[in-house]
Image (cartoon, rainbow over all chains, first blue to last red; front, side):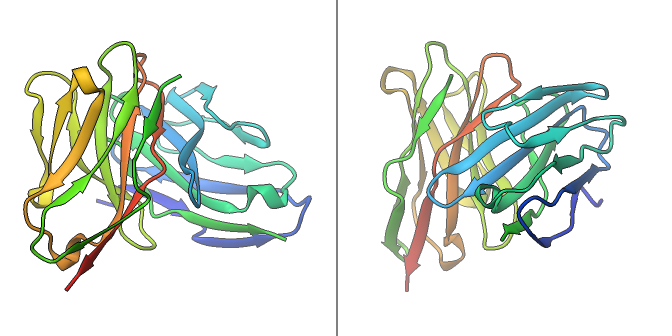
Length: 113
Length: 113
């Protein structure tokens, strides 16, 4: 079982560039989410989706877009990268909602210069 | 919104000693509560969860946590620390809709040989 797969694992961008962080799960989970992890701040929810075609904002959504065209994939887009978006990004999924254990990917380490 | 407080960003224990990691949450109704562990350069793994029922929850690797509604606490314990327990530990609470997770800022556990 691959579980939750995130690509790339590392990325360096220049301010103003755009990119997409990929997340795919093979467990047929309805719920998927994106977090950013910053030192001393734990994980903060960026966006989440409760099923294909449905997305919603989390705690820190500004500067990020998401879409959910299939059950398996939940990409996170940075439209115009800023140094404040330097972070480690985690994708997670669960069968349905956050009353179920979340399965996490290994993270994408993103640096914005 | 929910919030989670983890007292002590760094905890050191001797090998074989009791591990106690503290977590308090703010909620007007009993939420769903989780503990996750993160090893270096990895995603988060579920240790244990409380949804309903028995207030003493047993997890993997000998960890357990007790839900105390009167104290709004969900502290994590392990009777005897092992070197392999060295990691970052996160307490998390799910909101009543089951759609958003709120993580604490994490506690880094060091085990001294």
